Amino acid sequence: MVSNVTGRIAEAGELTTRDYWVTHVRRAVRFADGVRALRAAGVDRCVEIGPEAVLTGMARTCLDRAEDATVLLVPTARKGRDESFALLTALAHLHTAGTAVDWSGFFDGTGARAVDLPTYAFQRQRYWLAATGAAPAATEDVGLDAADHPLLGAVVTLPDSGGVVLTGRLSVEAQPWLADHVVLGRILLPGAVLVELALAAGEAVDCATLEELTLATPLVLSERGGVQVRVIVGPRTAERRTVTVYSRPEGTRQDWATHATGFLTETVAETAPAGLDEQWPPAGAETLSVEAAYEVFRERGYGYGPVFRGLRAAWRRGEELFAEVALPEEASDEAGRFGLHPALLDATMHAAILNDSTDPGHEDDDGGTVIPFAWNDVSLHAVGAAAVRVRIATAEDGGMDIRVADVTGAPVLTVGSMVGRPVSTEQLGAVPGETGALYGITWVPDTGKGEADARWIPWNEVADAVGAVPDVVVLDCGAADARRV
Image (tube, rainbow, N blue to C red; front, side, top):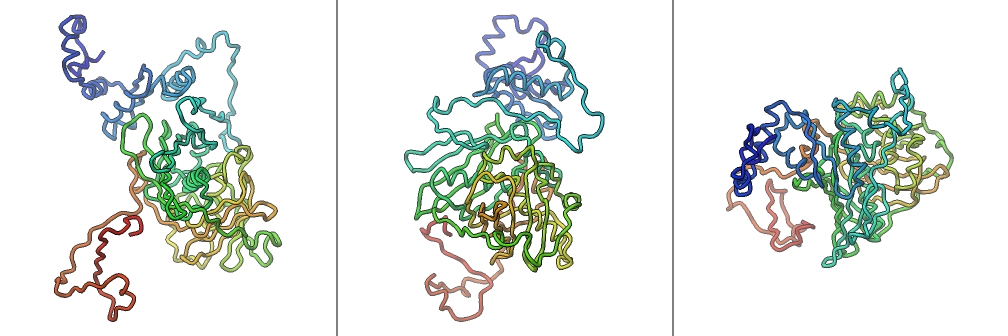
């Protein structure tokens, strides 16, 4: 037993005196010292017995990064979750971490029996049980509106501004298919999930098109625990709204990390997916072999698991790419719960990765790992598809113009442009909360030009200014709208 008064392991008889507990009430709680004392004593399994997971989150902040990966912190109760389920989950975490559990006593009287698992590698069939998660508390009971979406649990409308907040929780335990998206050795939340969350937010506020969505910071998921998610939609301004996706590790009070920002609009983008309702496969298209595609992808840093291995066939015709993409059987039943299942949307871009890896015209490609960075003009035209046709062309900004249709050629999704950006292991970090931004502000030293060389030009006369383009331009923003600047 560790004393919260001294922050060390208590001595015999120390806790049984009246003076000790008077002191306990009056002095500061030395919780961090207590956690370190446990570590010094060799403790690497900590179980919280209490109504919530508050101490678990606090204890993690008391550990340094090297210890964080080796110490198991398990709460036995979670707010809003069934108590029996939460306790059993804690027991399972301890068991999988090597703690001995008397399973015969646990199952005594239930009629359960042990079964043999296959002795060969799990290469052809998944044997993991589907995680359903604990039943959430009724949102109406706490004054919230339910969000009819598999990744979002509730919707809150802000009375003062008209903005909307959508809340959810992501983890590889609740959504096992997320573990199949591995980039550079990290379980990375797909950009397609961010698009799905933004489109779901748009549906909640009657904004059908995702005009723009830019990745700010990648979200790396842990194998244990989850993250709280907030999708914030701003008030309506000139028929558009801002949308921002945040997250933070559950059970902590860390600052919210910004993962994506953009705009929603009521305007519906083009609906006709050109070339997908004609002859299929497209006439004159060259067949691309996809048999070893995912081995090629692995060499480039993409460790796709079964759910994300959706590329079934691909063709190339000039600068156009065509593909057939489908969810595996174990994920197809869940497709109807999404606008477009993120694993399916992610797989629509795999033909482009394959083309970059095999096309002689891409010999100068460095073979690096690229992830979606900016999406523009994304519109969903049909929901629940489990198998689709895809056409990829080059957009005006150099990104990918993506058109997705169902197996009959009817439109499902259009993306005006998707621009990728290389990512490094340093940007992905080692654990959630340590990822680095893909863009930021860099202060550049003064070039040495004096103020005497400067001249001010009203913004509306810039187009008429005569002369060479200057090396340095300073914009006086004044009281301008910061969002538009």
